[in-house]
Image (tube, rainbow, N blue to C red; front, side, top):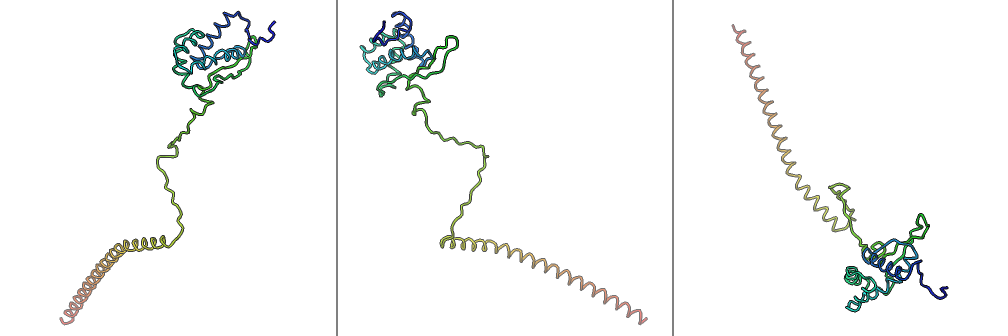
Amino acid sequence: MRHGNKVNHLGKKTGHRKAMLSNMACSLIEHKRITTTLAKAKTLRVFVEPILTKSKTDSTHSRRVVFSYLQNKEVVSELFREIAPKIAERNGGYTRIIRTGHRLGDNAEMCLIELVDFNELYTNEGTKKTTRRSRRGGAKKTETVQSVEPTSENADSEEVIQDAVVVEETPTEVESSNEVSEETAVESTEETSSNDETEATDSEAESSEDDKKEE
């Protein structure tokens, strides 16, 4: 009978259970998350969290104690090199269990156990606001004209601008008037020359008629 004994033996002998938890802890430290049954995940959390707390003090004694549980040099070095600096400010609660449903076959309740500080979706450190600028509206940008309220300074500036426009337009008007005067002068000279020619022909015709009469 197991009165007062809260350890879940998981249906295994002591040696088998310790080896399994050691291997699962190594996989969790290496991959940062693993999928297993809910009963194993709860037992693994009790097994691995004291090891993570021990890794905060980087000393030879701490490394030897952690190695006695994990029995893997590469995992121990990764634990003290990568994971310990990230969990240094956290006081317990290094792991998270997320239930994922039941397994087909034996209908065992499955879950995902992961290290809290290595999940970028739930932490605020990895989420940074980034401004994205795209040119989908076209390369040219339309200029917007802002409406300005009429003030005394704006009125003076508008008068100065109108005067400048008038000054700029006057030379063109002078040139156009000169061109018109030149055209009228040319037309008048042509008309006078045509009138002189008609008068000359009329005088010649009269003189010829007078000569004929005298004969």
